[in-house]
Image (tube, rainbow, N blue to C red; front, side):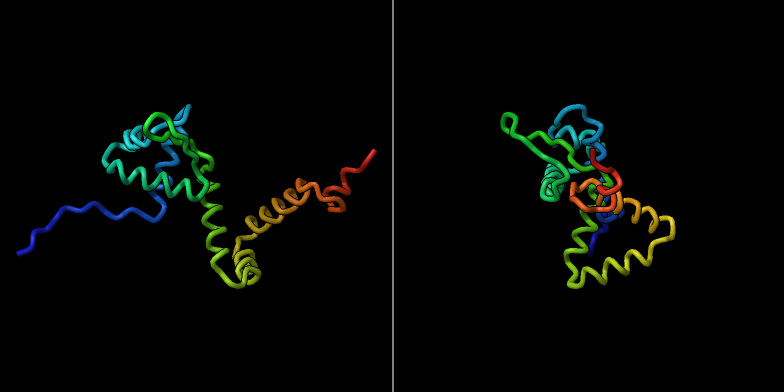
Length: 141
């Protein structure tokens, strides 16, 4: 005879990472994994929090430094930065980048497409490349 266990609903992909980042962003200084666990309500195993922090570090979303016998953690990326990382990861996994980007851009609502074009124009202006349209507009003395 099998016994049934009470199981909590499965979290959405990336939900724990977002929660850990949110906890880290509330800290004024680098904090330990235990501190993060406490801020998240303490219902997660310490090892789970450390695993999530290590994954975030691999994604360059957090940094760590040794303090005593353990590590303290600091956020590098906010939720938008983490989402951008995920988007790049998906793009990197595809063979035809141009087709993926073209499909993405054409599927955006008009306002988002316009925003993306504006952001790309601004990014071109900050690259420091000579001869760009943004660079030409600034003029020289």
